[in-house]
Length: 156
Image 1 (cartoon, rainbow, N blue to C red):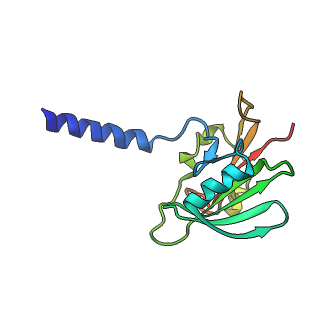
Image 2: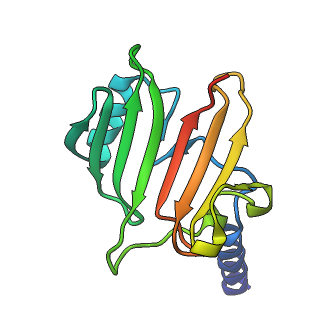
Image 3: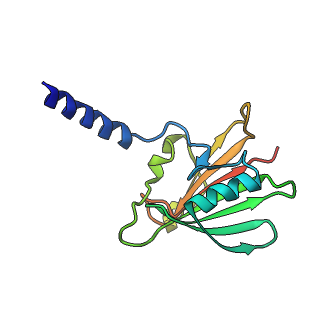
């Protein structure tokens, strides 16, 4: 009886983790747009290594993650995060991320040109109590797996 219950729990857990998210998340690798530059850098130091600055308010970090190799973060002049972009790993051991794991593809706007394998799914998240309005984008050339995942503020 206990073995059967354990098997049922394992099957349900596997099924639940394979379901696509109904709407996209508001963070990537523990980073969200409501973080200050200082808080973001603390989190980035936990998961990776600083590589370089690009332009004035943009940083590139190499991260230790099964799916992503780098994170690019941008800050405004006040030190708030403007955007987060995670770049997918391309090595053989990478756990590739399907677009469908980000959110319901039927609710996404396809901003790419599928005829030339330019997949660009976009979801809008309305502003909430503690968050500005956001746009989540998943891009890539592969029809199933993303190359980049981004969250940015929607300017109103």
